[in-house]
Amino acid sequence: MIVPIEGFSKLTKEEKIDWVVEQYTQDSKSAKALLKRYLNADSTVQKLHDEFIENTITNYYLPLGIAPNFLINDKLYAIPMAIEESSVVAAASKASKFWLKRGGFKTTIIGTEKIGQVHFIYKGGFKKLNSFFKTIKPKLFSETTAITSNMKKRGGGISDIKLIDKTAKLDHYYQLHCSFETKDAMGANFINTCLEQFATTLKAEALLYTPFEEHEKNIEIVMSILSNYVPNCLVRAEVSCPIAELSPDINKANAFATKMVQAVQIAKIEPYRAVTHNKGIMNGIDAVILATGNDFRAVEAGVHAYASRNGSYASLTDAAINNGVFKFWIQLPLALGTVGGLTSLHPLVKLALEILQKPSAKELMQIVAVAGLAQNFAALRSLVTTGIQKGHMKMHLLNILNQLGATQEEKNTLTHHFKNNAATHNAVVQAFNNLRKQ
Ligand code: HMG
Image 1 (cartoon, helix red, strand yellow):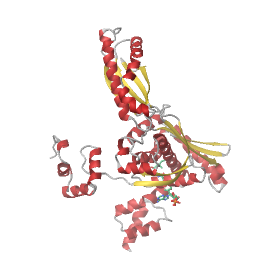
Image 2 (cartoon, rainbow, N blue to C red; image 1 turned 45 degrees about the horizontal axis):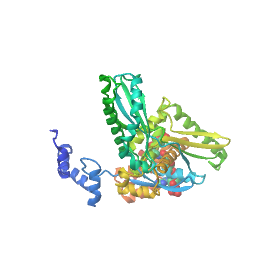
Image 3 (cartoon, rainbow, N blue to C red; image 1 turned 45 degrees about the vertical axis):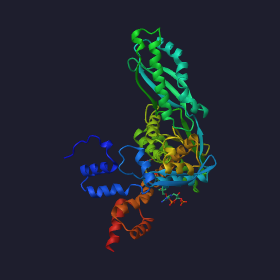
Image 4 (cartoon, rainbow, N blue to C red; image 1 turned 90 degrees about the vertical axis):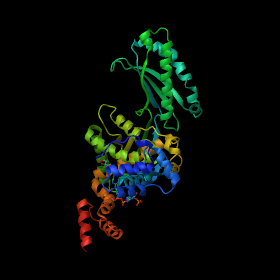
């Protein structure tokens, strides 16, 4: 019978492993051996991983791939991607190779503003609260001087603090809506520390504010936290070329450009399609975010909120044909860091950033946006021409053969066979069985 456990966090790693395999696995000996096989032989590396999270019992590996030949603003990058899904890295690589010969990717940073909020309850009138806020605003800044001094030296800090009345949506609910510039840091810790200080100052000053009546003095802080919705921390990436350069056959080039625009238009008005369309974009984005030690959950949440900003979930990319030129672009919010957090702790993250030529946070935003655009281009290109399965299954072939337990010799034979044959799951199983019979 499975029973709850008290004090699991206090057990040693060995004891945690013993407990979980004995309680929850059928073959505890094999489960334990598996968990141990995935531990790193280098104890320093293992200790580092053990301490990233809590209750670590082993490591969970993802492959790290490279998509080369990305020409971004005339600079050549090889992009590291950490992802488990076959065909993503190949698709990014194919798109980069395609655009390398057509001028590459052009990117622009539209803004770098980060947001945080103090959510609080005040049981009085807005006018009086606003006068109070104006009085204490300089103090909100001055009482964070110690926290902000290093960030200020780097050119960042608190940009503004606004009082927002949200009582139309929730009784007595107000916010301090704060904006920050965090330069090369993602800034979560910096922002949250500032916000908690704002909350302390707000509450303490309210108690001393004589125009407040007794019941108004008690401001209740609900919470102080950054927002992962950063619509003004925005980047744009674009590719374009004359339609004639899309294919040696002008009819095919015209048809391709038209279908690409139609595919994007569908994703702009049809949420069922938009979700899959954007999922393809996130294949590229998440893979680079993970490889560079950034927070993909924060990026995902913010990006999808942005995709819904006009009231309906829609495509993050756009496409147009103007005067015989095909243009394809993406605009999305990305709050990223190239210093702090995992970026200075995880050895592979450090290496990924070195491969990217030690980018600033702004440069990383541009690289990540390009990875998303390239991924969408490759996916749409397949979808509107051959269909997705041809290329995807070609890349997925090794996964199926591994599932079937194929030997290296069988893999070589069948990979060769499927160069000229459609690699559906059934076809692969059948070819494998035929080969074994031989
Ligand atoms: P292909 O034309 O068969 O490739 O494309 P190729 O053999 O002619 O090679 C051309 C280039 O592609 C290579 O150049 C590589 O850059 C790359 P080279 O290195 O030879 O100079 N490439 C590879 N890179 C690394 N390893 C490989 C490899 N093969 C080609 N093994 C390809 C094959 C899969 C690239 C193409 O069919 C493609 O881009 N398909 C799209 C795949 C895709 O989008 N996958 C994502 C998963 S599907 C999904 O989740 C998203 C989706 O639902 C989103 C949506 O609906 O919008 C589709």
